[in-house]
Length: 300
Image (cartoon, rainbow, N blue to C red; front, side, top):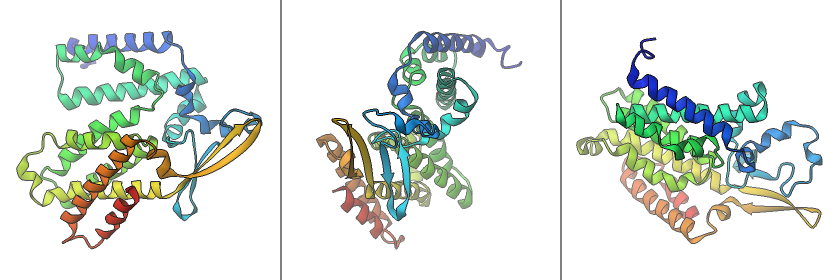
């Protein structure tokens, strides 16, 4: 009740709920919003009878060590499936999708207000920024995990560089590596965002803290994340498509799905250079730095 009696937050919250309901219910949903959860349809025993252009188990990711995962699309992971599942089981499909997207939007707005310490008219400027509502409520990206990762990364990195114990630094570093890996698996486009995530996370860190031993609490999660990217790119992706009424299956290297255009190739070369730089810094104290050179060779 104390929060509700504070007009600084009460009226923006009412406006936020009203705008969310209007945009959520007034704009029609479209196919791409539900592709994110396509593998949920595999729960239906008759789904394989449908002859869609990309049918039953159309995209299967083959990881090293014999691991496999059904993917909703060639460059998307199935993270959204697990996040959406409770809503899917409890509610009708379109209402479940709307409430799931609204939950994502609520978390994003809370993190933005809290991270930047917004007050007064600043909160109103954020509340009235309509493109964010459309982007998240009718999410066809997906974008929710990627956006949330920006703000959580900043919090974790600032904790890593604060006065905490080595075990606490290890805990936040582990959370950071897990967060980045999940965001990448959710959509591999996250590789484009990752340089911005790093800069955004470090923007408030004093230079003196970047040149002492606390930097290892940040560098090691970067190494773990790059190792996961290496693990992901090392596998293959199986694609099934109907061509002229026949089911055709292709197995292609995952790297080719991400490196098929010049801009992606340049991005991978950036990661190769960045990895070599980090491996060089770690060479004296990290006996496993040679593994990151393997990562660089994979990207080239």
